Amino acid sequence: MKIYRIKYLFLSLLLAFAVISCNNDDEAMMDDDLMMDDDMMSMNPDFSGTYAQVDFMGRPGINTVLGADGDAKDAHNISVPTNQGTSFQAAYQARLEALHDAYAIALGLTAEDVDYQPNILGDILNGPSNDGFTNNPVTAEVLTTVLATDVLEVAPNAPTTYFNGGTGAPNYEGAIGFTGRTLQDDVIDVSLILLFGGGDGVRFNGEGGLPQLVTDGVSLTADNITTTFPYIGSPE
Amino acid sequence: MKKTTKFITGFGLLAIATGIFVAADHIDAPDSMGTTADIADYFAFEPSLDSDNTVFIVDLQSNVLDDLAYGTFDEDVLTEINIDVDGDLTEDMVIQAIPRDGRMYFFGPVAPSQTGLNSQVLVDAPLGDVEISAATAITETTTDGVSLFAGPRQDPFYFDFFRFNEVLAPSAMDNSGFNVPGEDTFDGANTMSIAIELPNSMIGEATGTNVIGVAVYKTWITTNRKQ
Image (cartoon, rainbow over all chains, first blue to last red; front, side):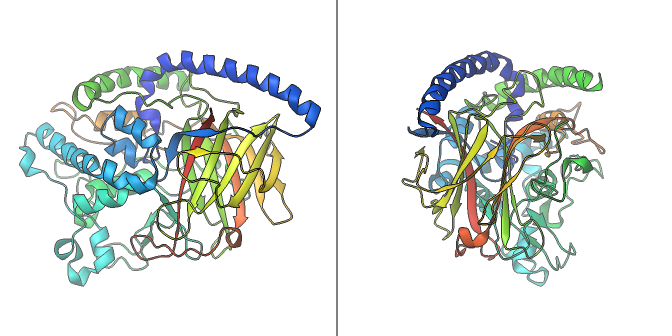
């Protein structure tokens, strides 16, 4: 459920859940108290039992934007990557096209006038001389197929970044991506560019009467991160 | 004061946006939201260029809004970092973290006893443990060169979340997309972080590749509640 699997998308519904979670906390504390007595006797923490998956995250935020509905997001949380393509790709693609249709209508156009356009990955994968996004396009189906399998790739022997376009259009020299996620990576902007940026990455950039859909206009707060382990700043 | 104003405004906007979503997109609240097992965020990166280590950071919970579970690791919640080294999308190695009595215990990386949705704590593969920090970070480094941390940190995510909700539901009256500059909803928020830095040699060679052909581990995190 998050590009950043932010479930904050539904925070306004959380007040009802807060009551439930408080109850859960109370039960957990009672269990802990009992367990601590056992632990004190054995001096070894008790790690026994079976633990069942309740939440899942790979890449940040894709599911926030493309998840079909609450049931689908709940299903995603208790899924495994081997099944995610089959389970979620078609719905992601439909959602991506529906968001384009929504803007078409809001702009006074017909839905057919505003479709997803293959994005910059085509150029990066195929090279600009190949006119990559035309001849071998990263279509909505190709993109959502990649995104539906919700794993965060991490390269042990290459620079780690969510996405870096290198020198940018048209040659994208030094471009690299899908090799990790740093604290500095602007994953929201990257995701927006891949979803709405089209072949040059700047479609829907707020100019020419079009909406701004390729940046959310915020950046990292500098004191959030540090240069030494654990790399994130003290709580505020 | 500013924060309070922002959140009150945000709730108002959200109420409007959510009404639209429920009508048009059937969005409902996921089961795990706002619980002690709620994953907030996940990062994985090399700590410096050409480093032989990888850092994994799992953020659980957040106080970005009131009424969310925040501030205490739940002893009934097992956090797992799943690592597929050969590209078949099934976990070959897992790293586990689970709290007990003020300390976070880590296990792995090791092949799990079973793959899929159910897990047991891999007690035969202890990695180390660290005292759960308060505001000041307490870290532990094992003899294998593994660094461990667990405790509250700033939420490093940044996103104009409230505007995002409006952007998802454009209308003829509001179709301009995001604002530049926007407002970082997560500025001032904290989260419960679990951080581990370890040598890649403990995970093994990556033989799977990503979409651009680079050798990668394919990773994901889960939270798992005791049954």
